[in-house]
Length: 129
Image (tube, rainbow, N blue to C red; front, side, top):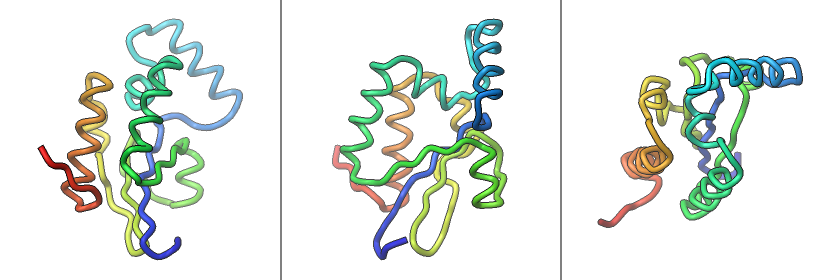
């Protein structure tokens, strides 16, 4: 990682692949309120929300990466529960937002506020209210 580079990795609670996409789709059809991944439920339901999230993350000047659980485990060999968000710097990978915190997020606005708060607490961004 280049010096000074910081990124946030959001790890979904689902695996990659066509078979898994089919399983997720089937779950959505049976269980309307949640598709099994609280991260997906808050951030990626619908084109408008996805676009709004991308617009929001661009304002933070931090790289955001999204990984499926199986690819993350394969690459990083770390399991802190899923979904989870990690803060990755040139020297460390730490939990930015735990599974418990992500599972407790109720809506899009709350997720944005949580990300801002955590990045501010980590000294990655500065907020002025």
